[in-house]
Length: 138
Image 1: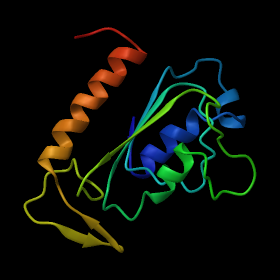
Image 2: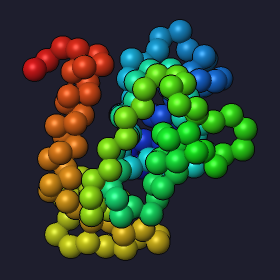
Image 3: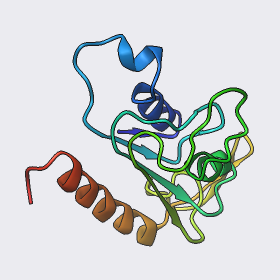
């Protein structure tokens, strides 16, 4: 599981290719909160969950990637290829929607703003995703 650039790394780690093949022990699932998806092919070797805000300018490539419209040069995801990737877009939410702040801020060209509603929904989505993909727990 990763957030922002860490979310991109979580997805890259389970993407078909050299990184995924380097290690004997494999991940069973990946969760990415508001990742940068522009450089990813989206051909996952395990189920993945991507959670983004509708108003987040950092993540538009995630929609393209999950729908097979990658703007990346070279291989890109086609419908049904690889393990399933589920994308959830939270209406009105921005980058860092899960990080409590007293006031919204603009940082390096990105608007960061907490959303209690998106956070609550994301927590439930992650719990359900992990329950279904890796099992265990309630």
